[in-house]
Image 1 (cartoon, rainbow, N blue to C red):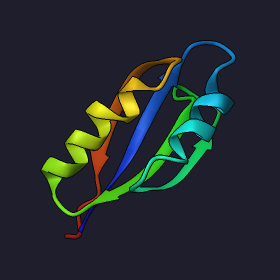
Image 2 (cartoon, rainbow, N blue to C red; image 1 turned 90 degrees about the vertical axis):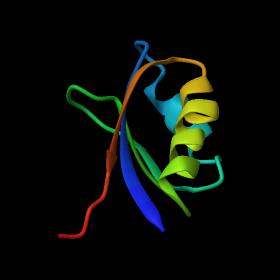
Image 3 (cartoon, helix red, strand yellow; image 1 turned 180 degrees about the horizontal axis):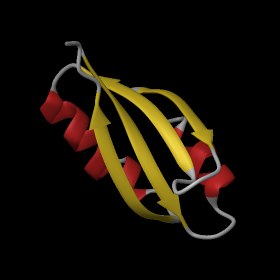
Length: 77
């Protein structure tokens, strides 16, 4: 199982709508709108890195109102 944080920047005023929409995507554990340089932070999981990448590109990045994403995989050192 691979987990990652996805940091998202949105259009002005769209953070809450984006977080609500992303929270419904299978594999998303949590989606919260936040303050700071990013507007939404998502915790997601998938069976493989490839599946995680497909989720981000095919589902998360397609949500209306998103301008940029940064995916940060969780590592266990």
